Length: 416
Ligand SMILES: Nc1ncnc2c1ncn2[C@@H]1O[C@H](COP(=O)(O)OP(=O)(O)O)[C@@H](O)[C@H]1O
Ligand SMILES: [Mg+2]
Image (cartoon, rainbow, N blue to C red; front, side, top):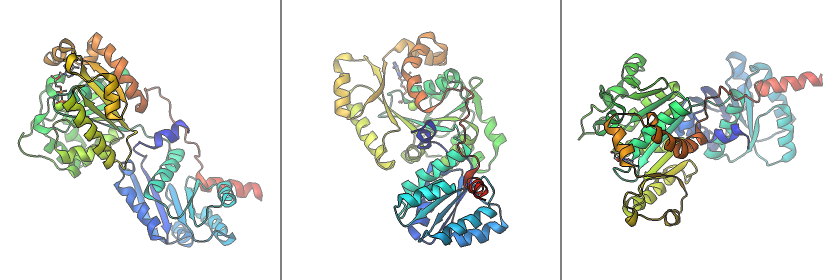
């Protein structure tokens, strides 16, 4: 699998439009379901009851979208003739995917040869629709860099907040990515202590600014830790009442993801409904636990629940064991942790009061402490690198810039 295809799985797809023409309700439903998939937050998917003939009519008058999906019950010469006619009305950058009735290799080859990006056989599941459309958009437009990373502790006090901070500092200062750190704990946030800022705003004010599309107000709510790292300076919220709902938080995250290639969300001490929303949307999840029985037990259950809300998938979940050695005699050994968790551990971080609590009370970033930075480079950067590319100015090459209709026109030209 190419790097691009690999990344297709967990990225926020580029801003684009997709039109689905189908007379089959399950195909239309699969298209509508994309709306609930976080990767499609910036993709406008139109589902149209109809077929290639309707598409031909529509694009005589209006601009064609980035991708057209055409479901058809028969693939014969009249269908391919209509495809060619459609090509005449579409812009060269439009790609096409055909959903047909049969699994026929020759037909598949013929359509691909005509310039169609992909061929799917009915019935199309939401998951198939999502991956085929994502791949077609990435091939055409290229990957966007946005990454949403969620950090959650198996229980309180296991280091989720400090890890969020370390990850954010590492993404910004070691991998050189423009990063924003957001704490969804409202009045329970401790981020201001670790990073040395006054919590000048509340989650409620931040989500209101996002709902009103008020970029200027939101900008004023940021604390700039360094050149590449900003933190949403919330924490002034009341502690004993929820101040935002999941939909509002999602609106805020959507807005931040457009501006920041890396968005890190600390979910510790947050309301469950906020945790659940972010965990279902996040491209990557870091669960942290200490090597003690109660924490590991919760970590195991938590990973199981995360897996369930992500449709049985846990490939984007990493487990970090923190504070190793704090009470060595009462800790579960490395060997037993992996066995009991049935999940591999991505990194172990030692208990080090001087490093963690010392820097925290001095409000010093851990990347500014020599030993802490070395620890981050050894343990967290390799994990981070798996999903956040170092800033090398490497742009992903769109592989098929001409799209289907460019391809088809090209073929037609060579034929004549
Ligand atoms: N590896 C470690 N060694 C020593 N202290 C740590 C370590 N990790 C975290 N801490 C400290 O433990 C406390 C709780 O960490 P925090 O990140 O606030 O936990 P959480 O967000 O999971 O509740 C903080 O004071 C933090 O500095
Ligand atoms: Mg915390």
